[in-house]
Amino acid sequence: MSKHAHAEPGKPVPVKHHDRVESPETSDDAPAQDDDVAALESENVKLAAQLADAERRLKDADEQVRQYAGAFDKAKREFDSAKDRIAREYERNMKRDQTKAVSGLIGVLDTLDRSLESVKGKQGDAFVDGVRIIRSQFDAALAATGLQRFDGLGEIFDPERHQAVTTMAVTDPAQAGRVIHSVAAGCIFGDEVVRPAMVVVGQGSAVDGDGLN
Image 1 (cartoon, rainbow, N blue to C red):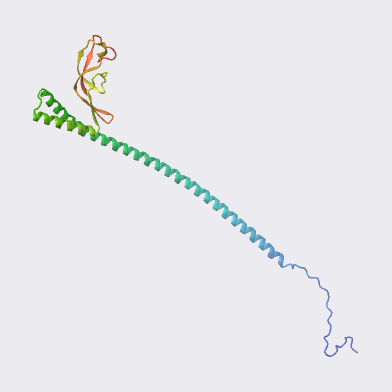
Image 2: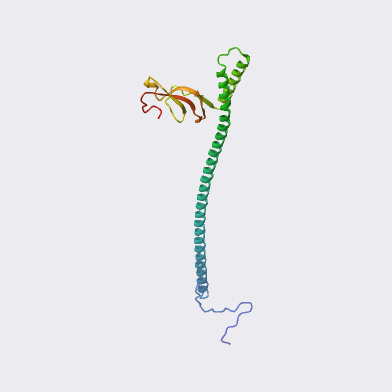
């Protein structure tokens, strides 16, 4: 009989296996893990560089926004200043033109006043009465523009408001240096004296500080 037993017909021949201990991780897996770690570290470096670049760009953008805001504020201040300057210049030009126009009409009113003064004693004359009406209407029209007339009577002499045509001796010390007679009315347009009043100023025996020098 042979050393090896024969299998019975229809039954498999048992095979004896030798025990083999397998490592849960083969030596081929370690290099793969090292490659993954290196790849992750490389990716982290790239991400960190991208983050730093993004932060730098954000900082640059913030600085640019501040510069733009500063330039805008400066431009706005310059624009507002220029607008105010133009408005003031326009107002001055308008006022100058108005003053010039009104000043040209004052002489007409003076002529009417002198004409009426020359016929002061005549009453009931239709022509004279008509001139008085015209003079009154003309005076009202000038007043409507803002023109104010003043004679300066009783005021202390002021070279800004009065033009002395002569002086007259006075016995009352209180009248010295004051307007005692108005030759022609002065005119104020707005807050500007466009024509000083032509006046006679009182003068005492000794002109004090209120007198006409």
